[in-house]
Length: 141
Ligand SMILES: [Zn+2]
Image 1: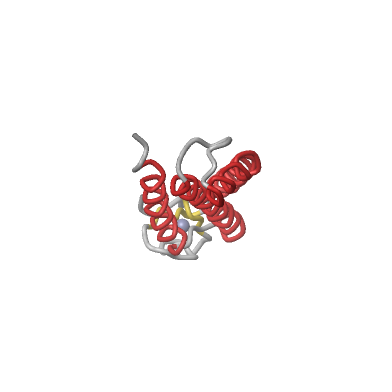
Image 2: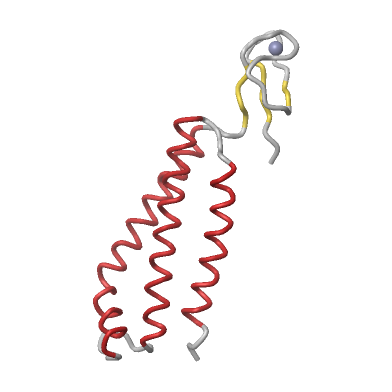
């Protein structure tokens, strides 16, 4: 989605597609459209939700997974040690995703704009997530 800035002058209301702080027509203040504050809050809430949810899951499953990794025991977790390791990595990756969404959300709320680095990081994290899901499920028959 291309960013658009609109003039805040009620009688002008011109929209510009290049980054600017003043209206090229009347010189009035402009505001960026599309990066509404709610998007920042949405990121913040998504981040908190992911961290909270995965934190609770790791809290509950972590001991059983770590026991399987350490001893190969299948008490509580019926997969192999490699699967337990991969699932634990997957959980950590999702938490890292949540932290990224949280930081991105705070950044958007504070600055009112989206930084390119967060878009790049989100794509990298998504790739990492797909890879860890693959590691976790590849040996499951
Ligand atoms: Zn204007």
